[in-house]
Length: 249
Image 1 (tube, rainbow, N blue to C red):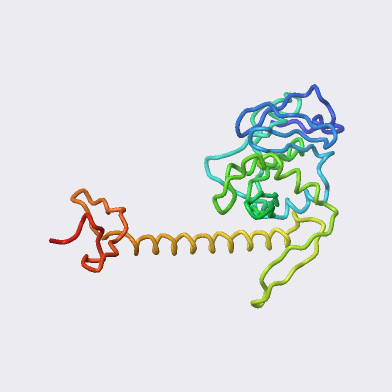
Image 2 (cartoon, rainbow, N blue to C red):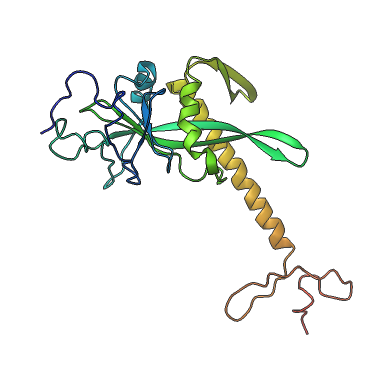
């Protein structure tokens, strides 16, 4: 039987409270100027009912719920505070799209790189805190996030209230909407479309690359079923379907 939380959420502005990441077990770092706890390993962020933007929470609660049979994430607040719960408290998870721009240095100068993905955001119905799970090691296209891992959610929060454009394809044309809340249902739908379109494009590129590579490789197959990875011979006197080593007799 869970006990309802009384008064202000305990995790707000109390530096001596200790919470642990529900995903990797690391102690969460309290960030006073943000009123949040974060995991420096996975990039997850914990916000109390007092510190989360009410519009953000309302938007998230309207998103599709994620139900993973046999898998549940325990609330990091309730698992620490025996006054709130006398047992495990599973979070209600929602799939939330995120995106991040980072500056990358190239031989021809600097460029902005767009990275996106989707993570579970868990809300606790007992203490009303919300856990934004870390984005993982890679974005939706399989590119490493590296040092940006711990910045993903913080950047998303900082954009709140600032007008920005979200681009999408409608009627075969590229259009944009202006928004101050990328957690909104419409905004999340557009971010999901953009992510899936990017994944599809990247998949097609990899297939073409693999097909092109296959077209240029020797067609010899060894007795163990392994294909030769040498390029086809370009010599006019050779069978150009095979490399120099596996020319038919």
